[in-house]
Length: 280
Image 1 (cartoon, rainbow, N blue to C red):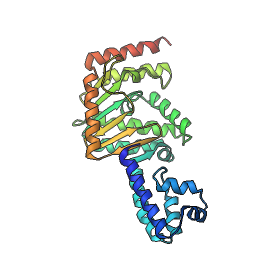
Image 2: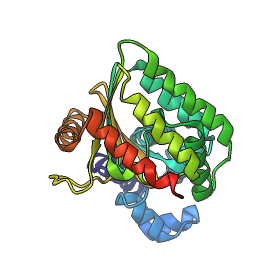
Image 3: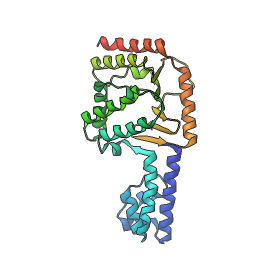
Image 4: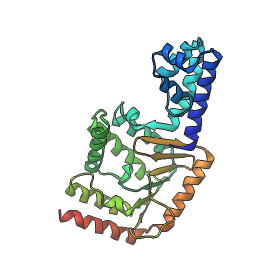
């Protein structure tokens, strides 16, 4: 979770606490009034738990200021814009999530991206994408609109064929070895990567195993036109647009690029990974 996000959550908590104290209610009485555990009131006020819309609306009514609910909802929306729970996003299905990313990519001229353990979505074959989206739905218990999601993900790849755009992609070598579909489909996916090396709109680098690096691979992230960072965690996506965040991720990406190999060197690593799946 980002520092900016946590600070924003603590600011919301401080505002909630201010409203409660102005209503001359202690934490115990306020929790009883709402029918909540006292610990929930404390967690919300100290930024240890993220409120829901229902929480802030109930809070506003309980302090006798229902009109303040709109203010609290706006603050909460700002939090949700930065911190996008995968379960909440995928509650509307894979197609909606893929189309949201397609909008960002369609507006971008330049994308810098890094993935540590997965082939980037914009480079995926249908079979590979199908395996990934199926796994995600099973893990999170979200709607299984897999085929709609696959079609929407494939549609995102239109940007690869549009002059004037460029995808600067880096992958940890491990991403070439993680099996997210059956071996035959994985071979086709790696073949797809070798084709992309020759695209005018794509620069593809691989960070080899055994390379000395001043960083750990951690999570994947995308830098959209030097204005927005989209970073993946296990349970959420972070959308960060502060100048400080963009500058930091750009610095990390440059360090990664210095450790990567390109062109025929990258091709050789892809072919080496491919060989293991032809033997399965």
